[in-house]
Amino acid sequence: ALMITDECINCDVCEPVCPNQAIAMGAEIYEIDPAKCTECVGHFDEPQCVSLCPVACIPVNPAHVEDRETLLQKYQRLAVTS
Ligand code: SF4
Ligand code: SF4
Image (cartoon, rainbow, N blue to C red; front, side, top):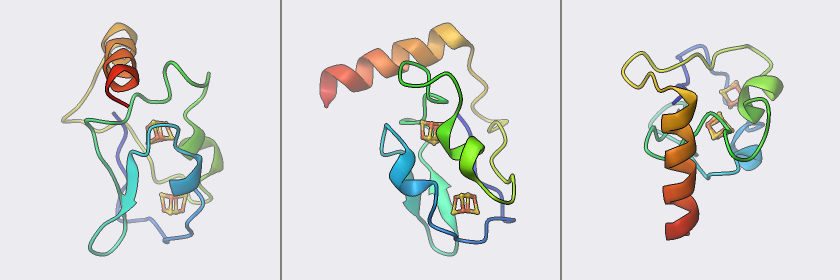
């Protein structure tokens, strides 16, 4: 899963483009729910939030490093429950 750092300027661009509704406004900046972020695996070739973020503040979450297979399994779980 990816994460949003405190460099976020709350530009509102990433939230609507997330195919998993993983991005939401937190207490001060936008936040990514690691349980929902598949790094866009299953939907797009590139993480949509990263490709649009104007300040490049969306790195991999070091607490949630996942390989492609794990991300694909998450995508499939989310597809079943939604
Ligand atoms: Fe959503 Fe994709 Fe960004 Fe994860 S990488 S938060 S799934 S847009
Ligand atoms: Fe923050 Fe980047 Fe999302 Fe804009 S696109 S709200 S700067 S994380």
